Image 1 (cartoon, rainbow, N blue to C red):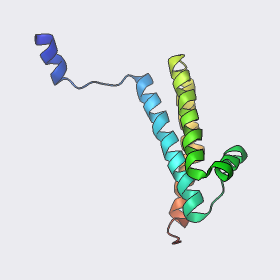
Image 2 (cartoon, one colour; image 1 turned 180 degrees about the horizontal axis):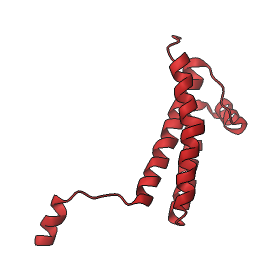
Image 3 (tube, one colour; image 1 turned 90 degrees about the vertical axis):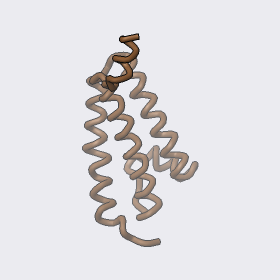
Image 4 (cartoon, rainbow, N blue to C red; image 1 turned 30 degrees about the vertical axis):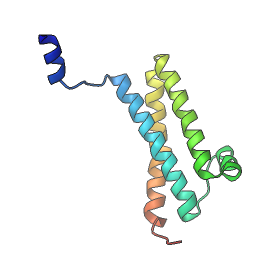
Length: 114
């Protein structure tokens, strides 16, 4: 009984690998949402030609959803294979070269009314 009460009173803490995976997922979601907004709201183009083709064929919403789900699945496989350094490196890479540029672009051109 005491052990159950102790568990109820202490919040669960995420391990570093779990935190890295959650950060990776968050960055993928941010990149997908900002890419969608950038294409639909300001008419920006996608930098990845394959993803741009998917967006033209499937529509941007479905294309970014599928591409980001695939990225998260790949990150989950790396996590399950204990390649936490690779997941962390990919998180930093996407943050630096996808999210930060989108934040800058949307800050400059995001107020365009359509």
